[in-house]
Length: 169
Image 1: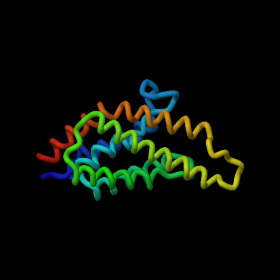
Image 2: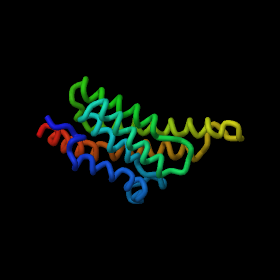
Image 3: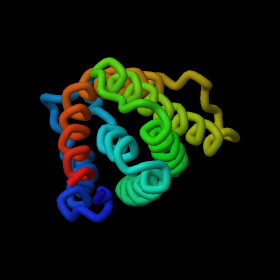
């Protein structure tokens, strides 16, 4: 059974994550906030390829996306934890196929990434006068979680179907 990390087309698909993050298609946004493309790519990857590959993919995506951002907060810890968790779900549980399940997992993943970034920002700016409920953080968290949860059933189920076929080949 071939693994996804040995398939060049699957590895090349990871290049779309930073590109889509930078391109930020406006037709696929909610109040100016697009979906969390890293979660949408990492979810099917980890479900098919397992926890170690999910952890490694989360590390690589986190490093690339942190290199593109100017802030001090990092997506790295959340993406690595999600890659490991989703990889374990893919190995130990029955195959996740339902659209609702994929949307819920993507929503939870985006919420964890958003909360991680929000908490890191609050800790970095702790000594300055920052309120606990910054409106931009709450807006971004809610909008990104919602749009990712809505897009995930279509996009993630399609990627999951293709990648499972490639992994069996």
